[in-house]
Length: 314
Image (tube, rainbow, N blue to C red; front, side):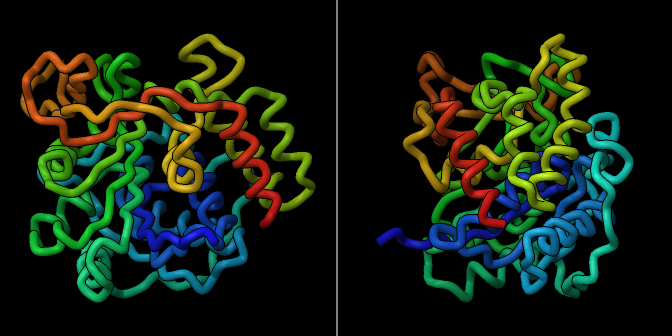
């Protein structure tokens, strides 16, 4: 019997965030979503918290609790990515106004209170955006550190270097101080960087499989990805573009699809040139103590088979 994982999804939807949320909600036997906390990132908080509710309703889960978290990084101005995701963050399909209400509690307080109210090491934090909410929760209530089972996050890069600057991946670059707090914490961490997400390419054939599901979910996923991926196709000069955040949920569902190394990962918080860069000691040359599993490879066909199969449940 498959044991169900309790998770909190921390997110800044974003089309690929939306697909990650849908994958989690399409997998109720393995995953129990305790709540979703929105953070400012791809678009401002007002939109990310709205988009999270749209996705919940699309998945037929208006009962889920959605919380608004931090509206700006811990110590820097907010940088957003409308040039990738469009003005709404979910550009592509025709969107609807969600009927779900946003919870009154702040997302950071929800994370803290939920970890305190559950048994230790029974909740995994799934981080799909900038790490502001998590860094803020760890700073406000350091006693919760021992209660987190694991953090699984999409962020950073090593061999692929940057996608928002020459050196830095977007999620880490937006709030490098929060990322540093998370990386220096004693919590078990698994990182899915650009090194692996850039192997998960949505070709026309793979996107057509989503549309061929014949459902509203399949149609909206296909339309969202057609929009968001135009940017990477143009940037990289390819006919396919990477699908980032669903790798986090896929890793929870089928970790054997992925491989990596337990290494030291640090984040640059000072340099003007390399701010937000994840310095991943892949070759073990620094002498620094390993602190995270850094994923480097994935069974691509296995990933897309899993994603398409699960989305057919919605």
